[in-house]
Image 1 (cartoon, rainbow, N blue to C red):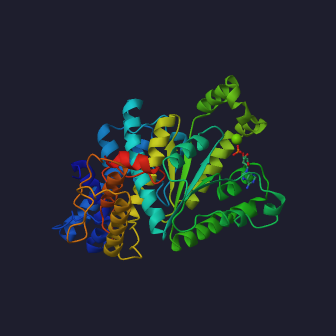
Image 2: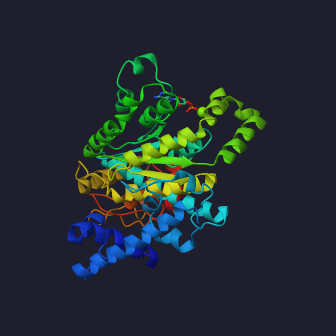
Image 3: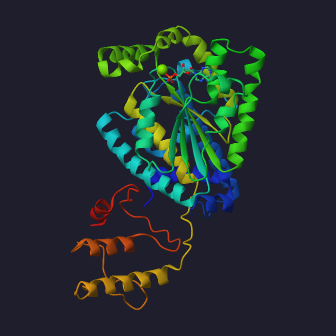
Length: 415
Ligand code: AMP
Ligand code: MG
């Protein structure tokens, strides 16, 4: 059942997408009956509400639990194409009305499960892909975000790539050369730890190339990303926003913990001196390259748990909107099911056992056994076969199977 606050928001989205097409595309049927005129007024009203909210967010004001449920984070934290942005005014402590970390972590766990199931579907479908670009100043939590987001996904079908100071070979090519080689293939989720944006950030701040060179790069980036999107890659960009005070606290933590010493670099301190220049460079990069097809999101990141929650939620919302489908089976499942039962029967006969109740087929090729308490591993396996959707069925397991789980774990999950 869709909760009321969520429905309201979905209405906004659907009406914006307009009529039948929007409804079909998003798979909800909740705008039926809206007259066109009323719909338009409602869009204007809700759009205004969202703008007010984004404004409050920009102003660093805390918003309540209602907002937490009602608005998609992909909208709330998105930098609207063509809008203004004042990073200094966005409160890095913002938690969108979440008061308690513990409750947020519960929400995050549920999001992780959804992410796991969605990424499994993306991988199975093998048609579209997702590119996540993470950018931030030092110690803002790119690594932590990667550990969290990628940890919730099947390593098959997921990649992370970290972009460092370009090698000699990379420098000898145009700046997008090394990026193009790492973008996701169909079915993949790829996370970039730093990205092509370094070429309008550090490169600009440190004067690595002249202004007239980096100035043209915004347009090149937009065109590059447009091409990716046209080829089925969805592009999400995140700026993890922390305060300079929080950065210093994290530097201290690194110093105090020998296990983190390896993370310390001289450049942490030299780059910090250019904080304002970086903020200026980020501002221009984000404004110029936040497009409808590849939006930027500014994530308040002083609280690591909220940062993980916001990024995960936006990734989940994005994957949900991609409407992935399991591919049609390449075999006739009915025939295969029959074959399977024949094999089981022969096997049991060899062992001198009668097939146990439930292992026999009924007329339509479906088993009589129900997913319940498996008597032994074999029955458990049958229970699992029942639970897996066949022939493009839209069956969603109440507890999605972790794609990497081993067989005994899977049996435990269906029991
Ligand atoms: P880290 O992410 O801490 O391992 O550091 C990687 C370093 O590589 C950072 O200081 C980045 O600014 C730097 N870097 C990444 N891409 C580029 C680039 N295109 N040009 C110059 N420096 C870069
Ligand atoms: Mg670093």
